[in-house]
Length: 95
Image (cartoon, rainbow, N blue to C red):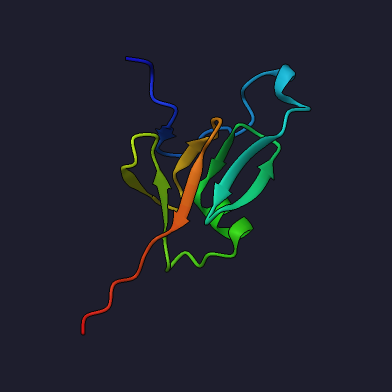
């Protein structure tokens, strides 16, 4: 089985440590079906939310290749891979 295209790393780390060949690369990802670009292969959940205009209180989820979903905390570091997709965390109302 091939490796998952989703990699989440916890904690803080250098976000630009993937070597000099990455300097001019652009990394794309989708949030709620809108495509965004980033200049580094790693980004925090908080940076994704800020780019997409999502309040940290709303929250963010990552849609994994198998269709499952994972909550992404504002301080989590996410590795951007081809096809990376995120969504605003859905709100549920009782009623």
